[in-house]
Image (cartoon, rainbow, N blue to C red; front, side, top):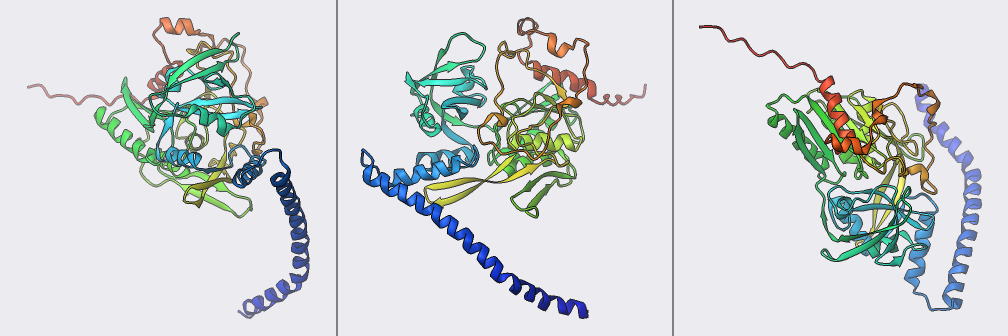
Length: 443
């Protein structure tokens, strides 16, 4: 007790002793910061007074903000006006447009993934395609916001995109009809006694919709499904809390994800609650290069907790968390504030989720020639803080049926989606045997 009483005074003395040094350090840092700001203001004033055309002050300030955030990472951004409304609508689950997630790459616009059942998806646009023109206007050199703005418009109007697809000799045009995208974050069906849950995005309704899908599949199968396929392919992600809710629906206990900020002590962990709505039945999670962000949280959590088998292709590798900060009634700052880690401590950033069973999408005729765009391909992407060693993969020279089928052969066999077909057949092998029927006594 005596020692405890002495600690506060000693701590205060220690703190006071360091005040001059700390103050000196802060003063030096402030001097450097002020010099940088002086340089910025000098450039700002020279542009205002001497640029060949008169420039609006708001345009200059907005450009400075955009440039500052662009120097950080690909996902930090400032949105106002139409961009703000788009950001707000996307997180709420509906927006207008073509249904595309895109990124800027060396002055070009590259498709990350088309959203399922949207004009872009129905037109056959694919991850890795480049958009070079919109309605005949060249996009090269435009900012990403300018390119997206050209693709927006009133529902019902036409939009012609010129596409360059690696592996094809010539560009081709695709004409789309803009429409209001009403995202259905979760779709489900039962096929051969197996529940298929297709999660397209993580908006505010995704967690509740997934729980509803599990309950509905239970009813449709009389409480006896063989298992579940959770399809996260081409899912660009969304809200962190919804990824936690979806993971929780399949888990009974354990960590789902941890979020770690700048400081070592800045860690927040999210855990599952009792109650596995899938009743411990086999689960297969399908992923591909378009599986990103919140979708990777779900795949990583179920994989690390040995709750699901991840099948398909390596995911996108976006392991950072963006905090949305309202700046005014019509503007918002989206700032990268943390990295997330799977229960085993893996950082997904720039590495992605490796599937337990690699299954290529052989029913896609462009599969072999189409490149996969991932987080590691984006300029200024955050480092993952974790090394990925592919040298540990076991080599096997035996021909694997997963890689020998052709798109033409699968089409003749009636297989439109090879990855889903492979998952369903695997689940049938994993499913527990059906309980014996009760014997009826003879009369």
